Amino acid sequence: DTGVSQNPRHKITKRGQNVTFRCDPISEHNRLYWYRQTLGQGPEFLTYFQNEAQLEKSRLLSDRFSAERPKGSFSTLEIQRTEQGDSAMYLCASSRKRRGQETQYFGPGTRLLVL
Amino acid sequence: AQKVTQAQTEISVVEKEDVTLDCVYETRDTTYYLFWYKQPPSGELVFLIRRNSFDEQNEISGRYSWNFQKSTSSFNFTITASQVVDSAVYFCALSLYVGSYIPTFGRGTSLIVHP
Image (tube, rainbow over all chains, first blue to last red; front, side, top):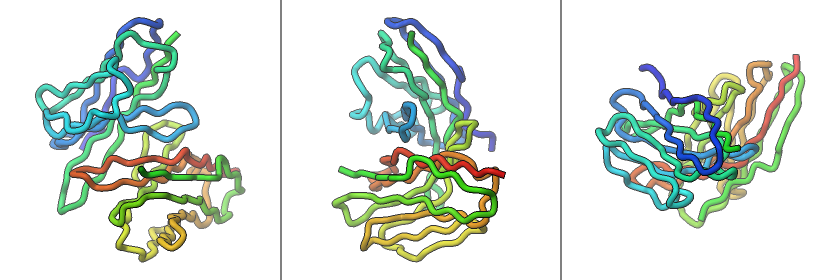
């Protein structure tokens, strides 16, 4: 399997702009997760999809954050009206349940800097 | 609510030393899962191990070993004969299983192995 890929790897934007990140999961992985990681902290869960259904979104940080996975393959995470506090690494992971076990495989992340 | 504490912020050792990374967790649930992940400088989180709360058997995998003790709510990780390539940030995480894993991560321990 090729791994989880994320684009772009780095994004610099000005406060107030909208940004969109893309995640391509490992093929045949039906679950996809988004996390945020700030400096010196562990990843913080944001949301996850099973196929195209978003099953948990209560932990999205504010209504400025939204995620989609329209065809159950790649996913996008959008942040509207970015703030300096949104500067972080945004991680994507994918998984598939196999023989009752499930392991999340992480991508390299998109590092966002809001000026 | 779940909580994971990794009290060691940074550990520095010389190659071939053994090193133990501590993890203490809090949960009111009786069924839960514990994880260790490694995050090398490249940034991509790598899954190392998962244990469920009913399996306190300690595990050894090569130079890695894990000590799970429910009595002290700890899930410690030991690297034997450390190598420079072990240098990374190591995260402990706790998750219930609610159709999927939604882990709560600790803040991580940065391990630096000097040649």
